[in-house]
Length: 275
Image: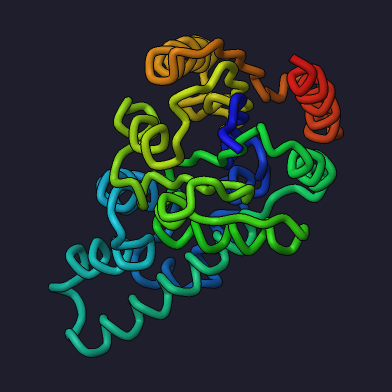
């Protein structure tokens, strides 16, 4: 059946809160120590973000290279004058592998999303896409998390060969070689999944608001602008009505905020399914 409706879920901060909590300074320091990255000079969050992640983000999130490899290469380039080639390679590779495996394993889908996602599987006229700017390794992890919920899932690049699949589509920027903010990301999905006749799009996204406090990416002004830009982009690509539900945890919502937002989202989805 050709889908007439599309529901897009963001991943980090929306389906997975743990992926953002992993970046808390106290927890990140613990992971840097346990992985061994701390003993390679990556001994505080500022160094991790400014010297490792930020310089490699575009390559890591728009190619098949992967998080482990970009970390390894970046640290090796920084430390190559301080260690012998043999010992540095072993230590760096082991530390990067441990860290990335820990990060992705902790970036699971919150179990309270399970009934929502299972319900959507009963509507063949609704296409469900998880769209994320992420590293190449994340695709397999996200599919595994969905399968643990008894939900069929497939990577977008594999779904293009079977566009009529009823599975949840995992669209990762690393697989499509372009970020979500680029129209090409959505054009690739529109063409590859035969979504030229969509009438309605529902976007469920935190628009970066659930990032750690103090991260300028999650400031209110930037979040609102990101929301407007994304809605406009989806409307232009799909020529469809676009509704966005901001999955944002407000400061006064309390410790059960994430679960409350999932309940609110479920109500929005139920209404959307009746359109």
